[in-house]
Length: 288
Image 1 (spheres, rainbow, N blue to C red):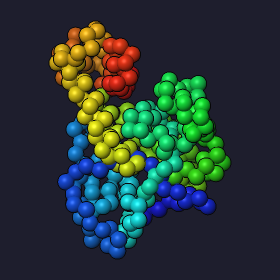
Image 2: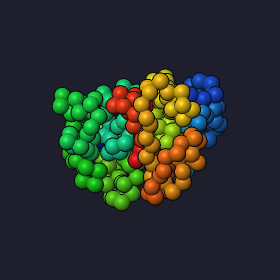
Image 3: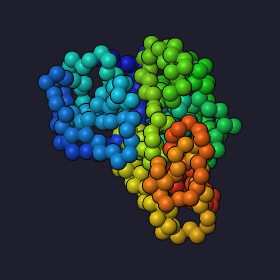
Image 4: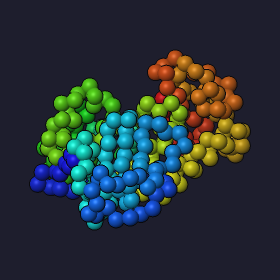
């Protein structure tokens, strides 16, 4: 069992969402080898992560390799968990987010108060709530992903670092953070083949942060708005322009009867929907 504790300041940390078919049962006092899955998180589009429930605990698997066992507050981790599995003990209230695209989703579930540090300077943000948090000092710049301020992150009591796959280019950074007792979660939403798959990562963040209902509500609301646009039932009334970076057509990737043309990019189905400023802010289909 790889249980990471933050040196002199052990604080619980990050992201949450619970949904599935499992029944709740105590995890205290039971050996990991004796336990079996009791359910799983229902996902509609996302392929790059999965969640299996073991009673009250949740086993998170990212990109088929990194695994994390999320243990609720007040519960004891089971004995005998494999060393390759990182234990995350809730609550997770103090995050360093170096995956800038994930910040949209934390904002979407009203969880910016759990994000205390970021790898993007204030001038690099366009999200109003994030800008306000940095101006108010509740969110601080702690160095870019490739050159983090370890002292600030450690002294600030960080409980979880959320990194993008760019961290794979600097593996020594992840190793250093983990050596300091800070667990690292590398999010792979950019590898999702469907735009709503990328957005569905909000369910994982909701699970980690205890905001499962907010995450599900946000995801379903944005899905309905996208469906309305794709079926021509949107009531906003202005022309929709769709831009994506993929060799395939938007129709093939998303299933909408759109005549939009896509440019050859990274081979993934990212898109943004521009109709009016208010619609863009409300839909928040992330990508491009």
